Length: 562
Image (cartoon, rainbow, N blue to C red; front, side):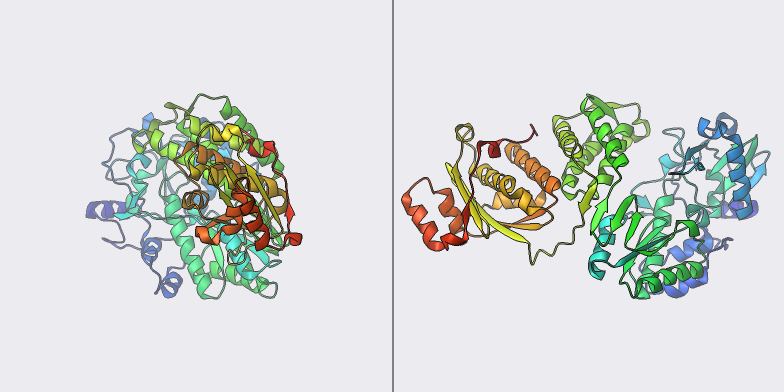
């Protein structure tokens, strides 16, 4: 292996382009090639046969290995790390031990670390290739470019599994399979061995496979498992893959067949499956931390996770400044819960925007030491999460909506003094309170406020439904459908609308209609102006089919200072 490494380095090209020396692994490269002839990412077959380049683009750093010390997560668990190394050696996943650098070039040594695996007493061993900041291996691996091509990788979400469930129908069966040692089954380019070194008990080693802790490992792994999903799709089944997790669904009569076929496919690929993590077809399953129930059509987060995230948000509301790592931590947790709470995604995107502007890529390496003042708008979004999580039970309905047939439709309208709205069996009208009119708000703001009041009045009856709003104000329609606005008052209305949606678990879409098509709501908005509008409204409907509902002063009060 050392001789092969030196030969590849001397060639100046990745192995798959230059020497093309096949690497040893359990993967059935011929099977991949036979089944990916029409696949748009067929180059992964080259990576599997000749090793995947890690994407390092820097000059070799002249740094002695003796200067690198392993982290406490490794040194405090000596026996566990030793057992891990012995196991990896039996798999042929590492080379060594060496007393000194065996390569013809510098041998980059990075520290080992370990953390507890989720719900396990076992520890996950990590090669910290981000150490030291600014001079690490990962610092010279681009997040945006791999082998000269822009990286446009997007990971599947629980939403994608919900999409399969929608396709297969309620009460269908879900299943999953998990790869064993996923990264550790994928060989790296032998020419990169000198970049993934570590030391243990005064001996030197190097990884032959993707290390946990390498910036490009997830990208490479995802591309390979996505190819497996493509093969499965060609077999007539549907599955999504998130790194080493495969989740699928099928009808009751086909689910067992699909589950068995997925296992057979992994076996044909030469990919080792973690049998104990597989879940046979069932109506209830955890996937990516979310429990999916195809009978109740719900997505569930455990109460412990909700409490954990709620306490973190509370702590943030007391903070004035935050570091990159702190921001990344809360973003990850809020993104997780917004998988179930779709309206909450709006209040994750603004934190993401702050992350990009406050911590650009040139400070990421030292981001844990740099603190930024938390913007007011971010604090308002965190307040939204605090208010919502305090009453959230962790259960949300799946979004299986077909907007061609909404469950409920209402139309609304506003003028400078009054507003109104009507559903299939109820209506209301009112004048704006003096607290509203004295501010001389733009008509766009008043139109959106009218919608918010309507949703507050009818929100409980909308529970679990898809609601379509007809409105003749284009600005309001755009704000609702895009989830954003530059106007402060309309932003506040949007936060209130999203809170009510999340609380009663319904979804809204807005559709713009011409004013002449919105006559009923227009008559209601001008009810106070003249008896003419009242008579026009009553003559246009069957009055006995509709109930007039009152508008209370409390309907104009927002639940929080968003």
